[in-house]
Amino acid sequence: MINRTRRIKLHTNHACNLKCKFCYYGDSANIKCKEPTTEELKEQMRIARKSGALDIDFSGGESTIMKDFPELVSYAKKLEFRDICVITNGLRMSNIDYAKKIVDSGLNDILFSLEGYNSKTHDSLTRVPGSFNKINQAIKNAKKLGLKVRINITVTKENYKVLDKFAKHILKYEPDAVNFIKFNPWDIAFSMAKELSPRYTEISPHIKKAIDILSPKVLKITIRYIPYCFMKGYERHICNCLHNKYDADEWFTTMTQHKMGRVSSSSMIKSNLLKKFIKNFKYIIQVNPFYVRDFDDLVAHVVTKKMYVKPRQCKRCRYYRICDGIDKPYPKIFNTGEIIPIAGKKIKNPMIFREKYLEKYNEKFNF
Image 1 (tube, rainbow, N blue to C red):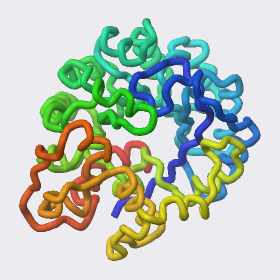
Image 2: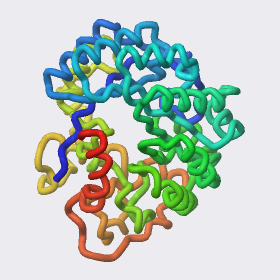
Image 3: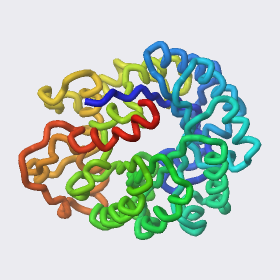
């Protein structure tokens, strides 16, 4: 089995300079919560390093709009984090002087959220005119400055039919990794469910086509939040809850993240293990103990019980034990008739498809 992830997420803020339709938080102007202080964020980083974390993703909201963001990046470098990354919409990083300042502070990895191959699609989803041009300039800046570049796309009704064009568009930037993330109507985003949620049967052929275009030149392509039964032949690209801890680009150092959250004054980040246990007790008792080998396994299975559902027919599927299922709002929007189980002996090892696939990528970036 490959090494577990040593990456943590530092949730810096909730504010953002975009108004994406699919955002779980909604309009940042409507978020009424205390943001973590710079000193609290530094303390979280210290806790993470003492707990063995090697890689860090700065995540918001939009981290780059913080006044002290360069200082936080510098501190991560001082603590000798290996991969120092920001997940960003690219607006501020489109300014080469600002981008260079952040890179000089220690940034060496960047994950962009690009929602289409043209301004019509991207700007419609972000609801900020000109954001497509800026993120493309930001990607160019990142490549010029020698960063590891990863690209996310949230797959929605507005962009799934042109994923092949998206793939051809980003190939010119030679990204190191690309993630296809199906829109999930969780939290505030549920209000956009009917407008943005596509069916699995609608999007899966287009994702496969895009993967075929990218595969010859992109080392790592990941699919999130789509059941295995729709990705037959492309299983190696699926990364869900049970895979996260074995993916160097994902966060699943659960106890470390809990320790970090304890020092935050932000109500949306602060962590209390006892309260979490009580809140999630009904899901904990649903977990099959024979599937649990450690604390991380328990958390992964609890998350799947809480956020996903497996229709009755899934029990006959060979992927049953390694698949999250479908997000809980999905049956309310559509139905479960399109879920067709794949016959065969049930697979127990969640990394049976993905482990070998990740070898070259992990070797290139010393994971």
